[in-house]
Amino acid sequence: MIMQATRISLAALALGWMSGCQTAGKVTNTAAKPKITQGSSVLAGTAAKNSTPKPLPPGETVSLAIQVGQRLENDGHLREAAVQYDRALAIEPNRAKLVHHLGVVYDRLGEYNAAREVYAKAKALKPNNVDIDIDIAFSYYLSGEYDESIRLGQAVAASHPDKVRAWNNLGLAMAQKGRVDDAREAFSRGSSPSQAECNLAFVFLTKGDFEGAKQSYQKALIIEPDMAAARAGLEKVKNARGNEIMSAQAGS
Image (cartoon, rainbow, N blue to C red):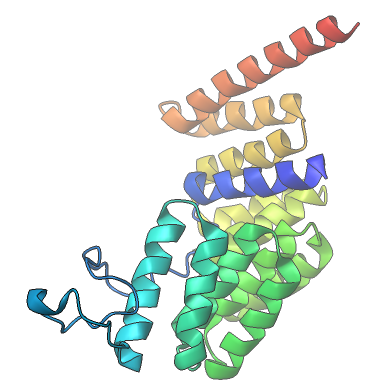
């Protein structure tokens, strides 16, 4: 359970460090925070605020549910956000982008089976949407099913070689399987050689291989001596190794 939580949290960090990540994007344009009481009419004037609230029209209910869901998601309340997105989809079930995004939210919650059921619905609505395929492959990476992630990722990368996320996600899964050279090649298709080494270093860190991470960061600096990310990574490796030694000494 600890390893699964570590894998999920580190994979989440990858979303910020790398371009290989789930980016279904916001489902609507950012809107101002609603100032109305949920369930009341947005058309009600101030004189009617003490009257019995009128039900929102379906379109406005959907819009409000999405706005509230986005705010909850941005604040880290993923479960509550999923409830709001479900509420919107109960009214308008054919919103493919929202269905896709809900799958991403379930992945972030660690509910991978639920995520894949939702992705299947998104695929039925948008059969040729490659971004859904990329996120399905990444879902298997998040759940630790690396072989399936590689199988799906290779198919996507082969058919859409311009998709950076597909190559980076494929590299992540290959590196977790110990296929370092294959992972380096995949990362290089989606980024520069120096960034590919940093991506490899990240995977080594998730596996507790500080020496492997150190070597990859050093290779990145040989390729690009002024690479700030590699220098910062080396410092993180140094600190992580120091903490590990201190923990081992404290437990002896």
